Image (tube, rainbow, N blue to C red; front, side, top):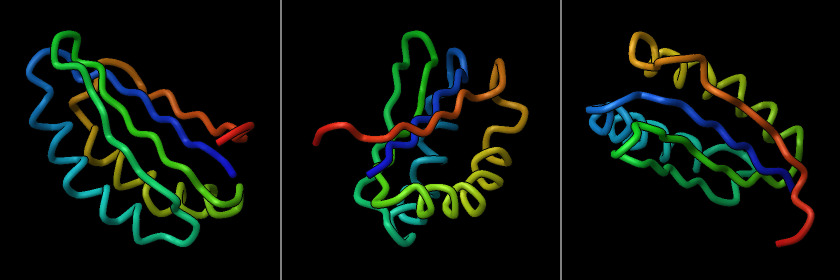
Length: 94
Protein backbone atom coordinates (compact mmCIF):
# COMPACT_ATOMS: atom_id res chain seq x y z
CA UNK A 1 0.00 0.00 0.00
CA UNK A 2 1.16 3.54 -0.77
CA UNK A 3 0.24 6.99 0.52
CA UNK A 4 0.30 10.09 -1.69
CA UNK A 5 0.65 13.36 0.23
CA UNK A 6 0.26 16.72 -1.49
CA UNK A 7 0.69 20.00 0.42
CA UNK A 8 0.04 23.46 -0.97
CA UNK A 9 -0.18 26.99 0.42
CA UNK A 10 -3.03 29.18 -0.79
CA UNK A 11 -2.64 31.91 1.82
CA UNK A 12 -5.43 33.76 3.56
CA UNK A 13 -8.74 33.55 1.78
CA UNK A 14 -7.78 30.31 0.07
CA UNK A 15 -10.60 28.25 1.54
CA UNK A 16 -12.90 28.63 -1.47
CA UNK A 17 -10.17 27.44 -3.85
CA UNK A 18 -9.35 24.50 -1.58
CA UNK A 19 -13.03 23.58 -1.26
CA UNK A 20 -13.59 23.77 -5.03
CA UNK A 21 -10.59 21.49 -5.64
CA UNK A 22 -11.86 19.04 -3.07
CA UNK A 23 -15.37 19.04 -4.52
CA UNK A 24 -14.03 18.41 -8.03
CA UNK A 25 -11.17 16.01 -7.38
CA UNK A 26 -12.25 13.83 -4.45
CA UNK A 27 -14.89 11.92 -6.47
CA UNK A 28 -12.53 11.64 -9.45
CA UNK A 29 -9.73 10.25 -7.28
CA UNK A 30 -12.07 7.85 -5.46
CA UNK A 31 -13.23 6.40 -8.78
CA UNK A 32 -9.70 5.48 -9.90
CA UNK A 33 -8.37 1.93 -9.76
CA UNK A 34 -6.68 1.12 -6.46
CA UNK A 35 -7.90 4.10 -4.43
CA UNK A 36 -8.51 3.01 -0.84
CA UNK A 37 -9.39 6.45 0.53
CA UNK A 38 -8.95 10.14 -0.18
CA UNK A 39 -8.91 12.98 2.33
CA UNK A 40 -8.63 16.71 1.66
CA UNK A 41 -7.64 18.87 4.64
CA UNK A 42 -6.63 22.41 5.48
CA UNK A 43 -6.00 25.17 7.96
CA UNK A 44 -7.71 28.47 7.20
CA UNK A 45 -5.54 30.37 9.69
CA UNK A 46 -2.32 29.91 7.73
CA UNK A 47 -3.69 28.95 4.31
CA UNK A 48 -2.06 25.50 4.26
CA UNK A 49 -4.09 22.79 2.51
CA UNK A 50 -3.53 19.37 1.06
CA UNK A 51 -4.71 15.90 0.25
CA UNK A 52 -3.85 12.40 1.39
CA UNK A 53 -4.68 9.32 -0.68
CA UNK A 54 -4.11 5.65 0.08
CA UNK A 55 -3.41 3.45 -2.94
CA UNK A 56 -3.33 -0.34 -3.21
CA UNK A 57 -0.12 -0.30 -5.29
CA UNK A 58 2.60 2.06 -6.46
CA UNK A 59 1.45 1.49 -10.04
CA UNK A 60 -2.07 2.63 -9.09
CA UNK A 61 -0.64 5.76 -7.43
CA UNK A 62 1.57 6.54 -10.41
CA UNK A 63 -1.26 6.02 -12.92
CA UNK A 64 -3.54 8.28 -10.88
CA UNK A 65 -0.89 11.01 -10.76
CA UNK A 66 -0.88 11.10 -14.57
CA UNK A 67 -4.65 11.72 -14.59
CA UNK A 68 -5.18 13.85 -11.48
CA UNK A 69 -1.88 15.77 -11.42
CA UNK A 70 -2.68 18.01 -14.39
CA UNK A 71 -6.17 18.72 -13.06
CA UNK A 72 -4.77 19.61 -9.63
CA UNK A 73 -2.09 21.88 -11.10
CA UNK A 74 -4.66 23.63 -13.29
CA UNK A 75 -6.89 24.20 -10.23
CA UNK A 76 -3.96 25.62 -8.25
CA UNK A 77 -2.59 27.75 -11.07
CA UNK A 78 -2.31 31.38 -10.02
CA UNK A 79 -3.43 30.59 -6.46
CA UNK A 80 -0.46 28.94 -4.75
CA UNK A 81 2.32 30.88 -3.03
CA UNK A 82 4.92 28.25 -3.98
CA UNK A 83 4.92 24.97 -5.94
CA UNK A 84 3.01 22.17 -4.21
CA UNK A 85 4.97 19.51 -2.35
CA UNK A 86 4.17 16.03 -3.68
CA UNK A 87 5.37 12.85 -2.00
CA UNK A 88 4.67 9.13 -2.27
CA UNK A 89 5.35 6.91 0.72
CA UNK A 90 5.15 3.19 1.26
CA UNK A 91 2.70 2.45 4.07
CA UNK A 92 4.44 0.60 6.89
CA UNK A 93 1.44 -0.18 9.05
CA UNK A 94 -2.27 0.37 8.77
